[in-house]
Amino acid sequence: MVSKKVAACMQGYRLPAVLTPLFIVGEVALDIGIPLVMASIINVGLAQQDVPYICKLGALMLLMALCSLALGVLAGRSSSVAGVGFAKNLRAALFDKIQQFSFRSLDKFSTASLITRLTTDVTNTQMALMMGLRMLFRAPLMLLCGAAMAFYINSNLAMILLVALPLLSVVIFGIFIMAFPRFRQLMSKYDSLNTRTQENLTAIRVVKAFVRGDYETDLFNNSVDEMQQAAFRAESLMATTMPIMQLGMYTCMLAVAWFGGNTIIAGEMLVGDLMSFISYISQILMSVMMIAMISVNLILSKASINRIGEVLDEEIDLTEPQNTKETGKADIVFEDVCFAYDNSQNGQEKRADVLSNVNLSIKVGETVGIIGGTGSGKSTLVQLIPRLYDVTSGRVLVGGVDVREQNLADLRNKVAMVLQKNLLFSGTVADNLRWGNANATQAEIEAACRAAAAHDFISTLPQGYDTVLGQGGVNLSGGQRQRLCIARALLKRPDIIILDDSTSAVDTATDKAIRKTLREDLHGITTIIVAQRITSVMDADKIAVLDDGRLIDCGKHDELLESCAIYREIYYSQQKGGEADA
Ligand SMILES: Nc1ncnc2c1ncn2[C@@H]1O[C@H](COP(=O)(O)OP(=O)(O)OP(=O)(O)O)[C@@H](O)[C@H]1O
Ligand SMILES: [Mg+2]
Image (cartoon, protein in one colour):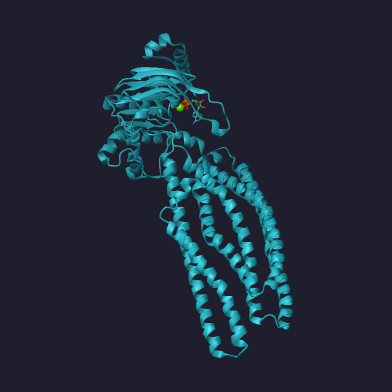
């Protein structure tokens, strides 16, 4: 079944979709009528040398042909309006849906597959709809009416159809059925080519850095070769249909001419009738071909429709409650929080807990450090605060209210998060900063940049704040990018700011300067600093130590040095490392 949400994208284009078959019915009626008029011209006009009669019917025939043309054009137009409009709605719906995706859903669909769904799959669906609207009615109608007319003209002669039609149908449908898996294979090759290309282009810098260019090119060439072979296998089979079709058609006509000629000689049929009979035969045989072709096309596009449906039907698991609760101040409480990533989509059924029974409370205005080995769940923990993921069990409270009972936009506006994997967008430096606050004045922007120790380097850029950044901010250093991201978060003037390893690429002195301004200029803001370096969190009001998803200790630097073995170990290993470096 086609997903309801896909079908709903016909909204606004139902009229042209309904009009198309109506126009087609008119067109078919005229196409069926024209050979009849022609028969009369030959049988009556020519036989009796009645010139006015010939002129009259000739004019009628011309008029019918023009009307049929006009209806054909109208049908083409309305099916295009419906198809293109449907595609527009579909794209908008897909994009809108993806914007609503939670991080969990984003983990599930890869970027490359989402792009394919938004582009190729939508185009396939659009084509199928346009063709379906025109041909799905036209071909069967033509077949039925043509056959009826053939029997009406001469039922004996029409017996030829009873032999030819099943024979030809079996052959043509046989070929299409054989071609079907080959087309399906072609489509899947096309998919993997798409995925490969998109993945490669997204990560082209990594490919170059690892000198994997040749390797990737080989893979790509293999992909292209496979596609070529698949396409050849499918198309070479399809190429046989036309000659077979023509063979069938000419054989039929030969038979019709032979038997029809004899009937005419015997005086049982008129020449004009034979002519129109031949027209019907060719229309009927063409319809058989059309029907076979649309069937295959529709089945093939079903894969695309399903893939679009998957996105549209993806359940939005981060739902907002009907009555959102007003929150108090920006304190944060983790209550017995457990969390596991949903890996079932990647074929791994295992759901290991990434966080187990975390209890932590953070007061308004406090600065809290979170430290722990790589993979210990630090990023996971802080991502629960702006509700990027939902807890598996337990609760996360912000301002005294469970985050699941808050208005999502309000919550996320209150919490500024500098993600570990951060990104800038193409545009100027100022444009990027205004992501935090669209109405920020230049003075506010500069203040935020000073706080994030970014003002100095921005001033040295060729056009200062108007310098244009490449996609992802490629023309900045890693540390510069991090500082811009912090400034962007500060511009939101949030109640809570979370820095997830956001100064990892910044030298220790700058790191210190940033922390100093955060503490002095931004007191009152609850600050959470996730870090690898103990020096980054040493002066925090408290430090939470995570180990393998468990909160093993929490306290001030000195207390932890006393009480927490793991903390001590990290601290001394970093101290020694620092000395060794020095
Ligand atoms: N999107 C995801 N889907 C599935 N598993 C994930 C995902 N993100 C992280 N994990 C897993 O969860 C665990 C904790 O990851 P997390 O990113 O929270 O660690 P971290 O403490 O921030 O590490 P680092 O210091 O390297 O940033 C890891 O074992 C990781 O493999
Ligand atoms: Mg992390």
